[in-house]
Length: 188
Image 1 (cartoon, one colour):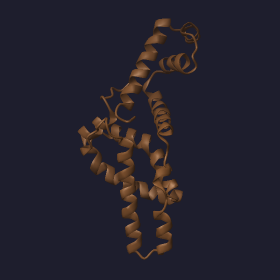
Image 2 (image 1 turned 90 degrees about the horizontal axis):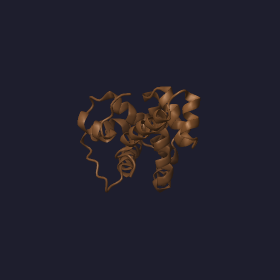
Image 3 (image 1 turned 135 degrees about the vertical axis):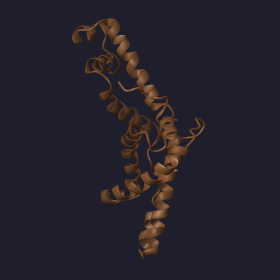
Image 4 (image 1 turned 90 degrees about the vertical axis):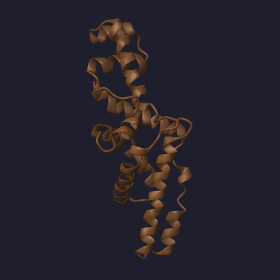
């Protein structure tokens, strides 16, 4: 298992562009969310993919200077970056001579319809779990998964996996601690 600093945001802020694994983790976690925002802005998949490149360029510049405040929402900050990029994108289209009716329809897309907080939190936890799975030996992961997610007795899980009951409890502790570390500062 790779060691993970206190939070992904701290890693990004402290490393600038140098911590490739932190950037890869950020992209893996947040691309689907931001793509869904683009879809709600009525972008085609191709347009969303192009637009996301613009957004990530902005994030590469801004995230290393981002100071997480637990009293504020990181997701709201991220959405603001995306929406400001969207407005700049619309201005460029306007200068290029796009039809005003098309621009008005795009501008009226309601960003308030974006994911509900509970959906976002659930998505982020599921995505982090998917990414974290590779950080653990299969026996450790399966012990935690069966014990926590499927609510199976530790004795049954231990017998099935050929480990001790104590190993099941240790697996649970390690995986959940890693999950808390991965999500530190990302869940508001």
